[in-house]
Image (tube, rainbow, N blue to C red):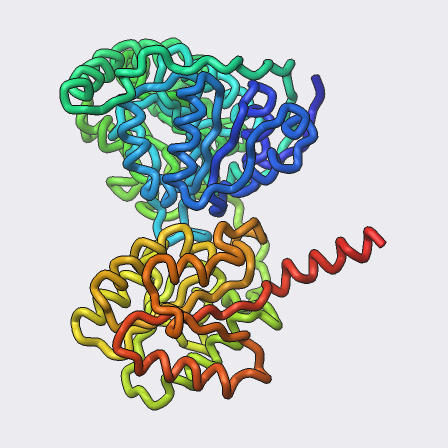
Length: 531
């Protein structure tokens, strides 16, 4: 059809539209957010009535995508690596139910933790669930893999994982689009029993999943995404996913003739790997992320022959790079021109951000408390942990602020204070607040509501305009759901309200509402342009 210059994330979106999806389900999370945003803005997606509103969290997203698959249509579900932890219950069980319409699960991993709490490797989940997984190495390969994956999902009747990483998601390259496929007709599942995971049925379904494994390996053996680049010598490289790019860059730049086995479809093609392995004296395993398959290959073959992350040939943590691959291969890279050292600049809250005024009031309200402890969460406001505020003490996972504050209150800590954003509260905080209400825990939950999911670019927030009703409906008493507007002119009043609720021996919620300065500015510009 035509070529487009797109991010890796956008290549996934383009491919899914071209392959006839009827819905995309996601919660925004870097580095996966741009997939859904592209579909939301796509004229083709709008014309074909592709469902693309944001979900409340990754679990609800996955289950909705599974429901669309049950109805016979193709669905795409997208998340970052830690989001799959949230969706894991539905994900693992969907391997046992299987699918009807094609279901592709895109997970964006974040090696080096550019915007994440950890750098876990999604390929573990693929092995854990016994599901096929694709790991493309460039934008065109990503486009092709997605289109292939929808057909493969319907062929093997299983969800298919597609793993990308930050570098692939956020780099651009030209992608050649191919002819579009029409959406599936509505065709609800006829074998309804297979979706009812009562033990007797689940045992049969699980046995069927295990019986499919040999077929999945056979597909990997013949996959166009697994192939050998011929070379000479007694040293070979097995390169997985995006690591293949780094390997080939060094091979081409320095005219090396090292043979390479590229792997981008799992489960592992055991015979292909064995044939390659047996030809060489040493094997370097290059994989981005954890040494998932290096560890497995060491079990298959001679440990002395294989090198990689586990023996220190490649670093155990962080991203790979061409320079790291070159060093592992003993290639001397010319010394680069010395760059001027630029002092590091930590991230900071935007000028005029409502979180700034909230933290100023919070610090003032706790100034007489000798050992203040504030439990916080994941969002822009996590930057309150840094100077000049130093206002929060924890950030573990989505929603943990509420439940950690409750646990600390159960231990006797007073005051027990949590700060959570509006989108994070609806994602994972509501259930923790219900626990606190049921136990009459002496906690104060501050919902810093800036009317958007600000950290990932200003997407819609599921609870906007509903927080008072949500908290009251859960059981928080009306008189202890207080509202403040975090502005400097309101500092004295806000401190007073915070202190009053800190002193209350029960559950209180403070709604700190002021629109994000970035989304407010965008709305103003848009309004001006429309005049």
